[in-house]
Amino acid sequence: MCGPENNKENTVNSRNMIRMAALSVACLLGTAAVWAQGTTVAGSASGTKAAVINVRQAIVSTAEGKLASAELQSQFAPRQNELENLNKQVNDLRQQLAANQTTWSDEQKAKAQTQGQRLAAQLDRKNNELNEDVQAAQGEVVDRIGRKMMDVLDRYSRENGYVVVLDTSAQNSPILYASANIDVTQEIIKLYDQAYPIKAGGTTPATKPAANTPKPVASTPKPAPATKP
Image (tube, rainbow, N blue to C red):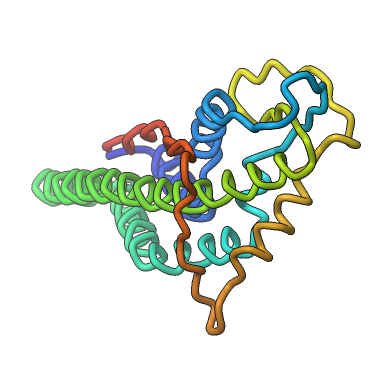
């Protein structure tokens, strides 16, 4: 069966994945890169007014983003608990087997090993299924908030005469330096919350599709499967 380090790592990885369920960094970065490449902000063609925004920070800092994070944690908590219980069973069997190497019969040891392998395989399968479901939920959240945020950013940029807005959280961002004076992240968060306030009872606002807004693409890499014992 797998050693304690492998089992512990499997549980920790799964727990961290749940805690970041709403908006995973990889998912956001992939989306931000697409937006940075595909979103054009209109302004004076001959102007030089530019701004920067941290799309990742903006999404997770909106009231809707915070609510989505809490909702996803609640949604996937029971399955996370199931994974932790399975991991504990695997560890308990490993410890029992190690403690009874000289007292158990070959038949008893073989039975414990077989049971441990079965539980580890079940843990591996459920962990992979949970990862896939969380990633899908994350992508939906990023897509929903991102579409509306790009509409807010587009209107803000037009009204303030910006010819370009660059995303500092995008992968392979060419930005080496940007003054805090041209960072519009907090302003966009504020405008987003005003445009899409959380309804009474903590429900998310309805989506209002923006015309000619490019659809963000979430690209979260699939986590490595748990190691079998």
